[in-house]
Length: 248
Image (tube, rainbow, N blue to C red; front, side, top):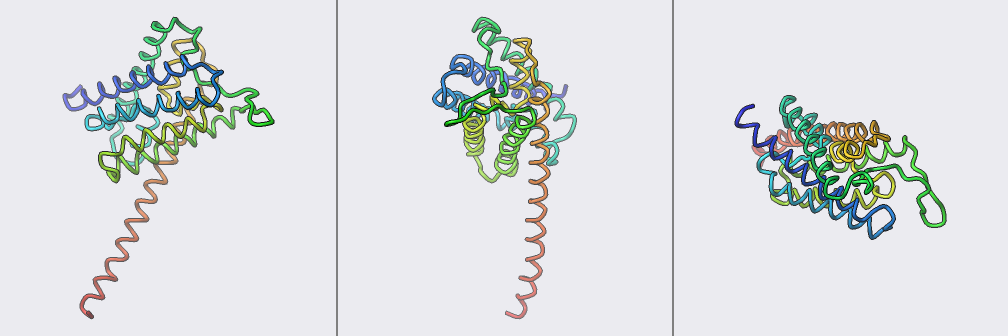
């Protein structure tokens, strides 16, 4: 391992470990019956954690802490395949380690350890709602799409400057406020896999591991397409302005 990549992988491992420990830990402590107040607490725990560690490690590794984000950055052409694989492995190790450590602290699978799950008969006003795997897949992919779009448009494109972690943290918070009661809203394979390994419960694992990747790929393709269109528009406008100069 080169000296150049080592600190990046270590930053991703520590950041993901901390994110899962704090986010899943808050979900485990709050529990599933706390209603909107509980979801709000979980949403802000995740959002503030990702924001804090993105500020801490953004200059080192970019502060991905999510394999879906890494895939999005890869597809957008902002990193190489070898580096992306190293990031994802580090993130998955960090997520599992964070959940296992949480299991030791909280006493094992009995707490649920923030395990994501599709909603069954959740009360919405005067009716109840059950999320099917197809609907859950769509929700998780869409939430990852939103997150990766913000990451690519702020941190990667450099448009938000030093405020990129704030935008990313707020996106995470808003996503969980919307999807927390429906799917658990991890939209992060490392965040989902950690509690699954720690509890031995792999229900709907295929959904939580693949849907965020699909959303990330779509976000990266659209981001790249929009960037090319904007560049072409700027290039097309410049000759026109140049042609007007002699006449002036």
